[in-house]
Amino acid sequence: MKKGLFQEAINNLVSQKNAPAESIEVLFGRGHKMPMAGPKCDECGDCSAICPGNAIDTEGGWRIDLGKCIFCMECLRTCGKEAIITVDAPDFVLTREDLVFTKNSLPENRKIMIGEEKRKVIGRSVFIRSIDAGSCNGCDVEIHSLSNQFYDFERFGLKIVASPRHADVLLITGPLTKNMHEAFKKAIAATPDPKVIIAMGTCAISGGVFSEGEVVGKGIGGQVAVDVFIPGCPPPPDKLIRAMLAAFGLYTE
Image 1 (cartoon, rainbow, N blue to C red):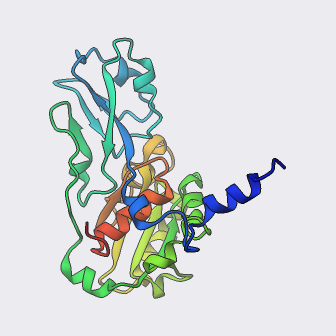
Image 2: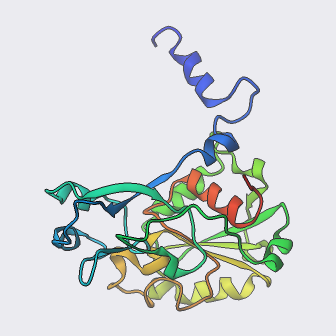
């Protein structure tokens, strides 16, 4: 091994204070990019035609549904006019409608939180049960990364629990396949009220590329009231941490 390489790797993993490298300042200084029509866009429809998630529509004006976007950026690569640009995507929203943007309505960094009643129940220790509702496992890999030594999300008071009976929050991934529907309903029923439901990733929000498959509806929204939508395919661990801390009122700038 090159001299000093091992020590450099260790230094990158932890700070001088033996804290994880991803401090709260670093986490909230990052952003997730999304495609958006730029000034050169003439709404020709090329980006809409190539979009695998049918997230872009140019009929009657350019618009993108971030709940269907898989963040492949194929629209950006396809546009010969270089009319597609990237902008900061929201880490989360509280309603499905807030994931739809037009050429003239760019995403805004707004300070939003779930209702006060649920925030009081959660407190500063958030017990989370992840529910795989038929995902490709991409989102679930990101959830597993939350507890590694790099992100170490338990230092923020976030903790994965083994049973929905012990949970304040259900973090749901996948498009809700038919064979997972009954188990999904049982998990929802077993979680004490008032519970927080998070739709994590494109599939949970809209069904994504699996929306025409053996699924129940278009995402989980038709089956349960969703409190927080976190777009992405999949959302990375730092985005999950930012979204939950902000939505639960555990971090305010």
